[in-house]
Amino acid sequence: MIAPLAFVLLLVQSPQQRTIAIDERLAEDARIAVGDRLIVNAKPGTTSGDTVVVSAIIRRGADPADIARSEYQVRLHLDQLQSIAGYGDRVDRFAIATRGDSATERALRDINAAAFGFEAHRSRDIAVGTSRTFQVVSRFHKAIGVITIVASAIFLLCIMLLKVEERRRDVAALRLMGISTLTVVKGVVAEAALLALVGSGLGVGIGLVASEFINWYYQGVYRTPLNFSLVTTSIVTFAVALSLVLGLVAGLLASIRLVRTPPLALFGR
Image (tube, rainbow, N blue to C red; front, side):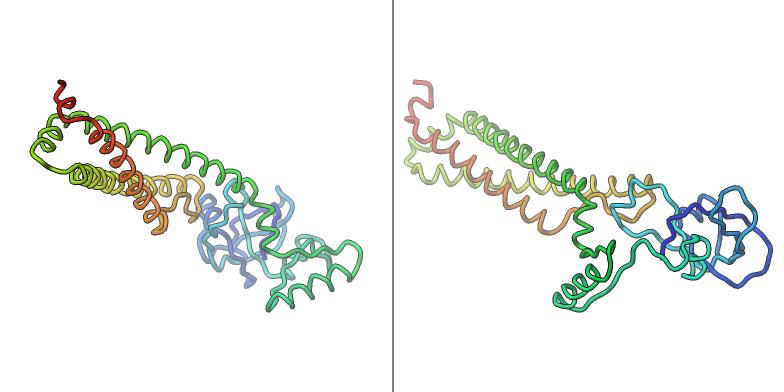
């Protein structure tokens, strides 16, 4: 159980077998190692309290709710926590594991009906309620993604139009030689698809490097194993497929515009 209390931790030499576990941030900041003896007290500035031995250093979990909190975490035995907190036989909240949805519904109903002041919630409902900030950030990122995709599609179309315009004379010569318009369209579309695939490959590489840098930097700042940036297989697949589709559409539009122009007009006559 995690104790949300202010603890006084002082190195002492008194032998005692009661043990506690502390998180890695506290161990690093206070320079505490496994086997050190500490005095644990709920009141800051006092040297009296329970003498304990650090038995483990716990790595912090990848919980987004802990990112903005600078609190240290200490895990105690239940009776020891009860004595320090001074709550007696009371608790603020506790968690119950159930088997299946029917057991969950029955537990919720029984706990809420047990007495006034009891209120039971599903863990997923609590997670949703405490992660609304991250949902807003997620929607904001989706909006940025949509704007970026639209802008990249327009940019790709402009590039294809410019490339096609530069090859007006080449296309005119091919058409005067008897090359069909369908062949010209296929060539331009294939070139656009190749350009889109190369660009998406470069984008995936840049994204992987940027993701690693973001995780390295912010995991060091917040001292957490939480991944702040992810590049998954589904994201890569979606990005490459979308880039290919946009490239094909841009190449098709540019080639149709080109082949509709008479060959002599392409020569400027």
